[in-house]
Image (spheres, rainbow, N blue to C red):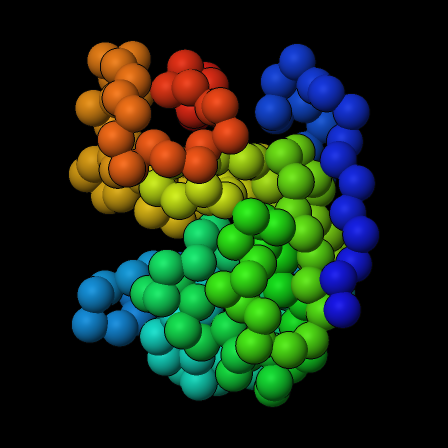
Length: 194
């Protein structure tokens, strides 16, 4: 089942009228040392797990220990090291999967409801929330999640680096396979997202 999403009107800044920020718990999981975030509303205890990849059971135990109810799985992109645990999270919690429609096919077997994320869509987490930013580059449907005070980037930015950094910093564009399917987004468009 897919839940229809509607985009906010075009805004001059991606940060205009952000919803109140959820609290964040960041956990390093798996042999690849991925970061997964648990975002939660302290008032309602609703929570979202970002990129539930490795050790889904550990992420869910952390939510249980904090008295959180997982309502969403926010996906930055659908490489296996970011989605391996989505099916388990959905099965155990009934979480809605929030993912770009350009990458949703990779999660067809996850079951449950899906929210097709679009640029500048606010995703509620209890009384708090995050804003989705369309950031293709690492993948065609890459999505970052912005809140007041933080940005979750998936693999668009890494600790100490940036996947597309050379292209963003030097504003160069190539027609290589890395850029195929970017829906006419230029490095300038990605650059100004950040």
